[in-house]
Image (cartoon, rainbow, N blue to C red; front, side):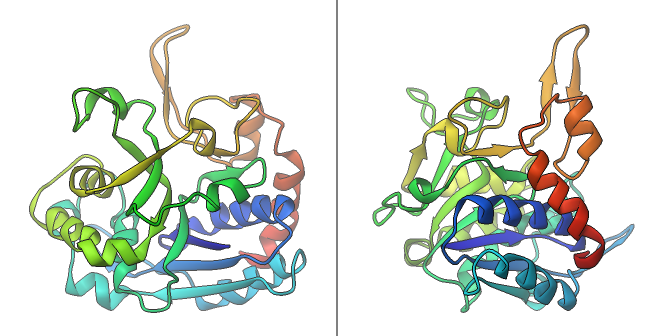
Length: 274
């Protein structure tokens, strides 16, 4: 099974938790690929993940299966050659858009599951990974809020969340999807740049069941839980944003103890790995 993460050095906590959660339920080898980059912004510098993280994470996941691997790929040069110029100053770090460069990275396999670093695996993901995407560029779950507001087709929901994406890089290359997305992000400023570009420009995408990217509340059939920002209306309107590595908030605000074993292991491994 091939797994892809993307981001700067701030994603390490989330990547560790996600990998631990996958390994606990999937005992066969996993191949983890991480795209990272160093980016100069007007008001700050975004730093790439350090090389040492690759070896440390690999040691950790090899405890579950000795054939599992981790490969850290610094694509700073690629990013600088094709920067998303119009979206460098959004509230989302430009490293969120690194997945749009996956078609240019020769080391990546044709089929790969992309995960945001705030996604936890609750049950085995074999069924998700086995989903047939031979005729599709991507497969994803409808965005919980965006499906209502950003529909490309007025007759059905078709706006997917980009936090969990099953990618067919062969089709993406053939149809130029990510190349078009990079161009779109370079020219048009958007609120959620890469997610908006993927939804607008994809020719053929598959809609997956909600259980493969639960963005709201943990349910009995949840396979992957995505800790996105959500809205609450009681006792007053407010947003809630809790990430898996904020362990106390997961317990006290979200009232979730489902992942205690994983989070305990994360806390024990944190100093050694991060």
